[in-house]
Length: 554
Image 1 (cartoon, rainbow, N blue to C red):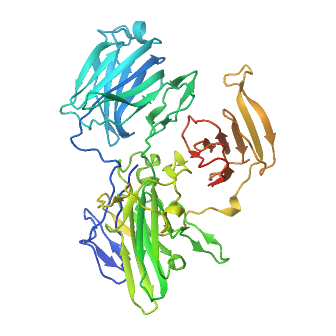
Image 2 (tube, rainbow, N blue to C red):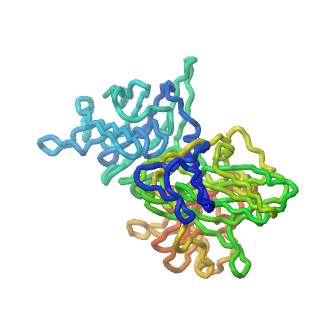
């Protein structure tokens, strides 16, 4: 996940700081093909880390595979699920005159979510039903800038030349794909080995699945159906894409430090902000919200909400007067998630694009003077926060071993070399207008506690297709402490149909312990597993920061 910032203006003075558009009644209107770009610099971090255009590629991807259905796919050279290479072994899509499947290699190259597919008959080497189906195979792909060479059981079946083909070969993430009904297979010993220029090799990935952990994340596509069984990874039909986790992934953050004028009293400070994606704002260690009539702080969520990005994006106004220091260094931080802009919920409507943030801050002093801060090149972009992934459908991965947004938005935080200078975003060409309608908020009057909590481990045979969970403990006390050991699962039944976020306090014996949480909207049950999860839909994973250190996860 990477991010791009965008600039925003208040327009309250009637002046237009852009090269196009018209200011009307305190708002900028841009329509047609015009692009509103600030006249001063603005920024974006692009993809982290950047891949050099002429990077030399020479690596091997291999795995032991058993095709139990009609097809199996290996993913490689992937930056994400919309930009990747996938080589599929297929015994279904081509038939002879007797209806027997003709074994084919089907190279797929995805660019911004659109695949280019080739059909290569390799039945001269293997008969699908006799030699391939339900047989353990060793599949190897030799990948270079010029070609991808495919071997099955050490037999070379194809050399696929890349000249003139779409996409960009890189030594990226690897994975698996099952894209349709009937496509099922089992994988073991999946690994990638890179050849270095000095003649040596290094393993970039190697998974034997003996530890029972799932090394993959889900991605765009059908429901995730994959799990580790007896030291092998089982991919069921219509599973979608499984990609190796990227340690460099993280929610984009945009950080700005600034000083207020000495010997001047700040009487007002307002931020006008929006995003391509969903954003949150922090100032000097505090999340930005507002006080309601009772004096309680309320927060608008998933800002700026969904609009058709082909036409319009909204901006929000935030009063941060109480958060700005009268003297000393101030810090502003924005975090940006995929939202409806590039999240899975959008079904690639707007393409695979970077997220973006735009803001303008106006500080007013007691003497009437003002100071204006905009999203220019003085902002920095980074990914080293607790939120590693965030998506409306796929949920959140929260790693408490990283610093929180509250910590990063303080002047005591040390900004290292991982923070990049931002650049322009040119992905939005519509109208920017003020937020309208009801905002998205947590409704406290609708909070629910668990009516029943069940801890179980394993499945008992009850002569049905699915079996029955082996229950270890049940309780109807919502605040009762639950202890989970490896392999155990806790189910919190909220008792009614609803959509919400779980708020659970947890502690763990070891740093890095993973607590997967699945929110099942159909039954309104929140499931916590003390193991690596296999289904990423509406789910969250939280690695805990330190032994017995409680973390409130919302």
